[in-house]
Image 1 (spheres, rainbow, N blue to C red):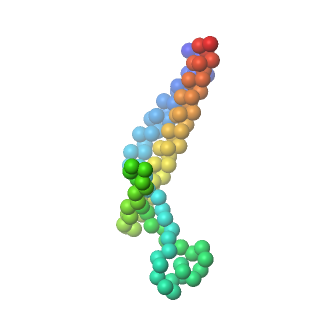
Image 2 (image 1 turned 180 degrees about the vertical axis):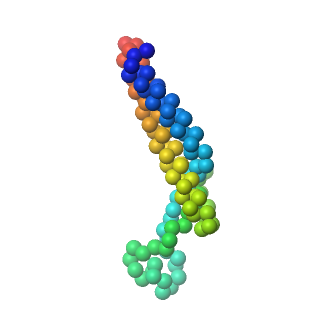
Image 3 (image 1 turned 90 degrees about the vertical axis):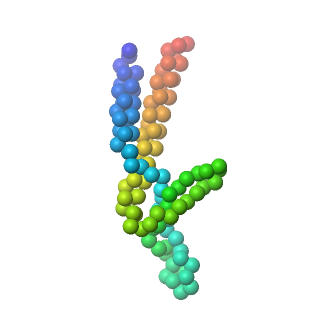
Length: 110
């Protein structure tokens, strides 16, 4: 096996192992919002929003579903949402490596 391919396979193996470190991930996001109360700072000052509110984020039958997460879980959800971002980034790196491996195979098979 050529060195380039061996390096890619090794890198991919490390990335796949790293995926396992994201076991507590959740697909959630923070929303900064306006409350709608007359006289509130969020209504008076352009650009002002209340502290972030965390929501679960799901897509079901083409529709985005958001479900509020109680504030007491904010720090936990923030960590878990970061794990989801890490998971997606690792997946993209694995996809790039798989593409490189496939391109090597295609070029070698000509």
